[in-house]
Every structure is written in structure tokens, then in C-alpha cells.
Length: 132
Image 1 (cartoon, rainbow, N blue to C red):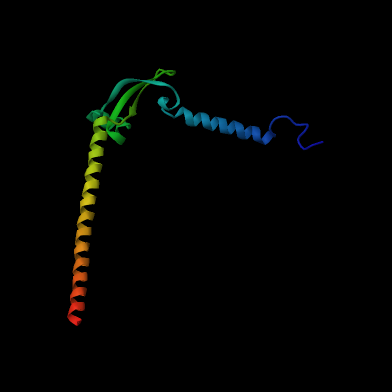
Image 2: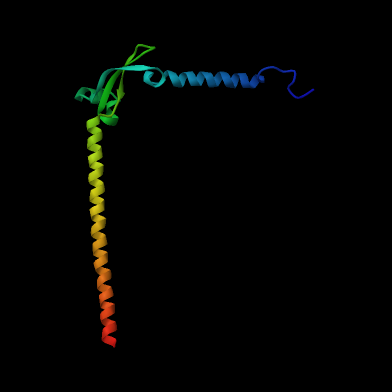
């Protein structure tokens, strides 16, 4: 008779393991925001956080913008951090400015180095001409 042919299901030790895993998963998902696990509708569009919200709402700390959402199944109202188009535009232009600044620095370094090499080459040619 092949090994395990007369047994059905999992060995008894594994039942406890699966039960513990299911319980742990339930605990983890119960602490999640409703918008992570269910459908939601945006009740208020993405807007800058007020001074009060910045102090009391943890979602405001990451971007400074928040939108109010309503989850479909649980009917809970929650705040969700969001990124505004204006903020994205500012970040884009800051990045572009940094790239142009770095490019100018390296262009200046290339010009300085090229002048040094040109001087060395001219000095070498001058010495060769003098030695003749």
C-alpha cells in the first residue's frame, strides 16, 4: 500500500498550522484601510491638508494632500493620501532644474579640462620645436 493511501486530509499537526495562518491573516486584514481591500468612491477630490488636518490626520504627513473616500461594502468614510497635479508639476520642474544645474557644472569641468590638455599639448609641441 502506498504511503498515505488510507489517510484523507492533512496530518493533524497541519490543521493547527492552517488555523493559525487563517487567524493571523484575519488580524492583518482587519487593520488595513478599507480602500486597500474593497471598492471605494471618492467623496472629495484631492486637496491640500488644512492646518488642523496636518496635525491630526496621519495621511497628510506623506504628501500634504488628502482625499475623502467612501468604501462600498463597509460604508466607512476614510481619508487617503494623494498626489495633486500641481505638486507633481512642482516636483518635475525641481528635477529639471537640478538636471540642468548638474549638466552646467559638468560642462564647465569639461571646458576646464580641455583647456588644460590643450596647454599641455602646446607645451609639448613647443619643446619639440625648441629641441630641433
